[in-house]
Length: 276
Image (cartoon, rainbow, N blue to C red; front, top):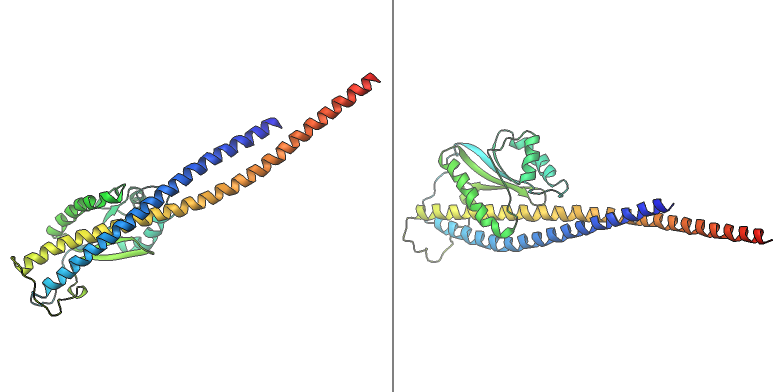
């Protein structure tokens, strides 16, 4: 009986330690998600200012019908970097994989890339998501270099970013849709020292970089929010197991005390009989 009680006590201690780890992981995930959401506010404001500048620059250029882009579509797919995020990557792949069979794919996220390869995708490039939101702009610099090299070679005619945002968000990045940018309505035209076409090219590069930063921050936040949910679910299961184990521990303690009382009572009765 004592051995069984010690086993239950050891199991309770092990589950408590696991609960401590789960709580720590949930706290870290929550802090990282909050950091990403705060960074996203600044990036969105920056992208909005670039969009306004693009609209004002487009107003200086003659209108023309855009010819269909040559080259294939390239999709930058953001998946999970680490584990313990529940079905995060699996759900995104379920929504995306059918439409990606014939496309070039860049995959961001180590764990998600492993799952995507197992499901038949063959990424042209894959990379790890930065561990902290502050490192995402520098990561986007490297990603843009890889993307522009393929766009410049003519391999890529369309560029999109796919990431988690209330499901699967599909964000077109290149070529820019002129109709998506508000033109300058009245007021003085902007003063430029460069040709409007050159200004537009530079603004487009900055805008794509900002949009990739926003996509990465959204993906980073969504992954950590999924991890928070997974850890919350694990914590509820740990609480349930602890309640079960503690109830069993109380029963075993009562049984042990009962056995000791019976043993003491039996010894007392035996001594009385011996004296009589």
